[in-house]
Length: 103
Image 1 (spheres, rainbow, N blue to C red):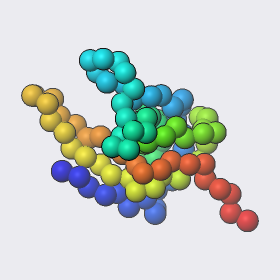
Image 2: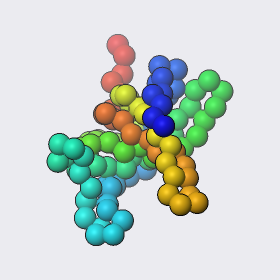
Image 3: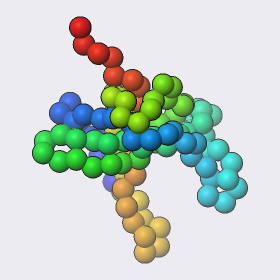
């Protein structure tokens, strides 16, 4: 199941270094449907009285992120998955970028 996440009331900051998504068997970088490399971005998310750390996949390497850098996450989607007896939720976004300070 794919569920869109409303990010309007959630604040995000980078939680660590960005890393490439690698194929489990070949260890080669995974690519999206357009041939763009995928990256894992660790994120702290807080809003509505809840906070958590998640890892979000995004196509293309986000630049300029360091720990606790405020970021903007565009079109965040949660997807449930199941492989054998294992199951969980993965996150994917169209874009992750530095949050521009308001004037």
